[in-house]
Image (cartoon, rainbow, N blue to C red; front, side, top):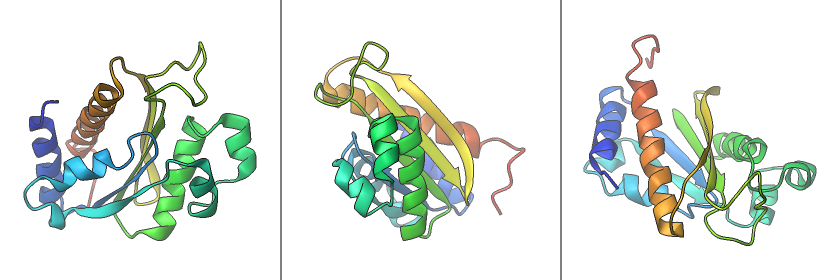
Length: 166
């Protein structure tokens, strides 16, 4: 993983005086951990929640069982719902939700193979970006590619002069 993109991303968070929180399923806390290793992480990182099990998505983040049953825990609909649920629990500027399939045994299919990851980001109650991606490699490689892509997307949006962060 290219850690430079993480440094660029966190520099933008610090420059814009923004805080960030993560709600992670498939990445199981690895995104939060990688962001926490950056110098001055305490100035931008609020924290994260790991909701690997679907029951936690229901009980902690108020995702309806109907949504989970209809779309599966590894879907954009559920990723948006867990991100919304995080916003109720943590006060932050940016909220990033991640679900997906890093190993067999979930809801993988021909249309949604292992390596499919869903990312959703909210900025102060508004959707900033949502992406469905398919990565290849070992579970760790899929997670590292996901982290790098999240940092890339954040850099792209935090560098957009049309957006006002104050």
